[in-house]
Amino acid sequence: MKVIVAESAGFCFGVRRAVERAEGAAAEASTAVCLGPLIHNPQEVERLQELGLRPVEEAEVAAGETVVTRSHGTPADQLARLEARGPVVDTTCPFVKVCQQRAEKMASEGYAVIVVGDPGHPEAESIASFARRGRSAPEDAVRVVTDAEQLELGGKKAAVVAQTTAREENLARVVAACLPRFAEVRAFNTICDATARRQREARELARGADLVIVVGGRRSANTRRLVDICAEVRQTRWIEGAEELSPGWIEGCERVAVTAGASTPDRVLSAVVRRLEVLGGNVQDGE
Amino acid sequence: MKVIVAESAGFCFGVRRAVERAEGAAAEASTAVCLGPLIHNPQEVERLQELGLRPVEEAEVAAGETVVTRSHGTPADQLARLEARGPVVDTTCPFVKVCQQRAEKMASEGYAVIVVGDPGHPEAESIASFARRGRSAPEDAVRVVTDAEQLELGGKKAAVVAQTTAREENLARVVAACLPRFAEVRAFNTICDATARRQREARELARGADLVIVVGGRRSANTRRLVDICAEVRQTRWIEGAEELSPGWIEGCERVAVTAGASTPDRVLSAVVRRLEVLGGNVQDGE
Image (tube, rainbow over the protein chains, first blue to last red):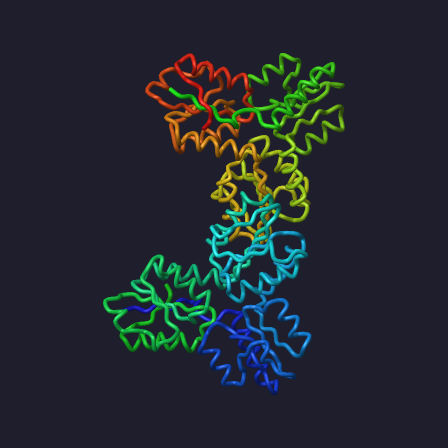
């Protein structure tokens, strides 16, 4: 059985940067807390907690505590309150920040703002919150939609941005659906390159494999997307770590592909690969 | 045999306005000439010629002559030369003018400009000429494309406009194809409402008919589009006038749908309908 590990699997630039900044804050500040999970990976959040970085809600932040914000972005009003209050280490991914600024600027110029992403996901909601801050009539012309059929706005001009981990197909479909509804549609492809590359590679690997194993947190949107993409072409299993891997899955498989979400630490991915080796796998280059 | 005539068939606002202005120029000016065919309908161009409006090339314009420009738009540099030279009656459709201005503005702001339309068609080329005027490096980032596969540009930001008679599907496909190639894609749905409505109605009527007859000039892009749309769902015949209608076509037909391009005069459409009545047709409301 050959095991092919995706080159693009694992920590992206934004996640690596967030983890490093959080580690720095934990080391420097006497007490540092993190507003919600820094990244969508339970093992890594647990490791940071052991370094002293406690995940808290806004109301639980005590005076003098350094607040580390999550990599997915923080709602605009919450970030403003925190910054007015004390030291903040903002780990928002720079690519998310660009998208937030874009959304706010477009909203301030009178565009309806459509965020292609997951309603309820912190990144999508944070982007939408910046768009709302940019508007004079805040609520009515900002929406988070996953796909074209959820679109129910119409008007003169719309700006479309994407959660950095959205699927390119969904962005294209939402933009296409906007065209008959708005006279002007201004679309920003804010899907990050690393995400797009990881998705393309996953699709390719899935095509040449008998089974795909995707490693990543259950709440990780970009991991879910990898699972969706691979499941469209091949049998796919989603695990958070090596301990979930069942030997029965790989019986009769000649090629097993492994990829991992942007928030999956290397050590978690390595443990999965090691377990596959123990079960008889030979790790190959991506070809 | 029932004959259903599309409500939206025939002269659009822009064509009607161009014909009225041309008639006015022919009546007022001692000598008036038209730069190329005013609209893409040979019968109407012939009628205007009988009123004294001679179609000419730019080089043939004599001193003192009033020049009537075509409804599809004139290349930017040619229009400037003519206006510097003498009286001009510009019949450019106001919707085309909006598109020209949009293309020029976007080009001046550094956007690559993509015109979705027919390469070589006077409207598409006129829109592209205004985009080129707006650029400092003129040629390299302005393109006319019919569909997504012709796109070979890429870069930072693109503006997409459409020939007013383009198909909405093609605009959507070109915009979708731009998304992975440009960080920002600014699309203007410049397809005119009358065109979009006429295309939708034609598709509907074709579905409920045994045969579709499309009446319009052979060089009329919007007529060709109607033919393409109807031929996707039903047998379709393209004629310029009643004399081309063959009785054999309607043998065994229970429902015949008739539509006409934006440059088809009412009298030409009426003659086709009268001929169908002579051949046994009963004209019905569109239902």
